[in-house]
Amino acid sequence: MRKPTVLAAALTAVAALTLSACGSGAGAESKDTPLISTDATAPAVRRVLDQPFTKPDLVLTDTHGKAFDLRKETKGRLTYLYFGYTHCPDACPLTMSNLGLAYKDLPKADQDKVRVVFVTTDPERDTPKELGKWLPSAGHADFIGLSGDFATVQAAARSVAVGMEPATKDAKGKVTATHGKTVLAFSPKDDKGHVLYHGGEATAEDYAKDLPKLLKGQRP
Image (cartoon, rainbow, N blue to C red; front, top):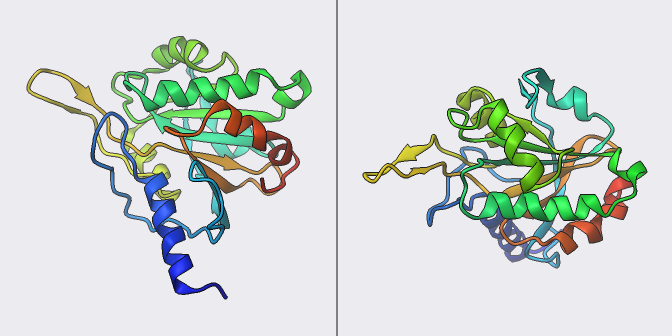
């Protein structure tokens, strides 16, 4: 058994990854306790979890206006899940760009084994049509954009320890959608989330380096 100090440090690291906020100095708190990673030697941009997350049971609308069942449509494929919004000034476009670069360099056969899913935290502005315009330029044309009821999205995010709050407008009319920056990677082997990345810090190289093992259902 690892020492309590190691466990405490690991929990702090995971919490820092999952509860950062986009376009804001404050984090969006989650009502769920993040699962603990005892891999205290892992890079700060990535955490491997001892107890994996269950993929959210989520059905939303894709960029073609059709219902998309997350579990059904991504079953048996390496799946990256990210909650964000298209008007985000920093982390969201950077995260999609880095994932897009890593994805683009994969052979076509491996691309077919990967799903990158972007779920909006600002559904009022991020309609399926808007997501369909934004995702190809922000990341890749193959990426999946989903929009739907905010409460449904928030519950799904909280089930994997990603906090978020409804979009707010300040006195100058600026809208901010506060959310965590975590990118969750779900294994094709058991469809569970074994790895999470800090979307604001992980580079395209970080994702690319882990892809060969993740595609085989192995831990990086």
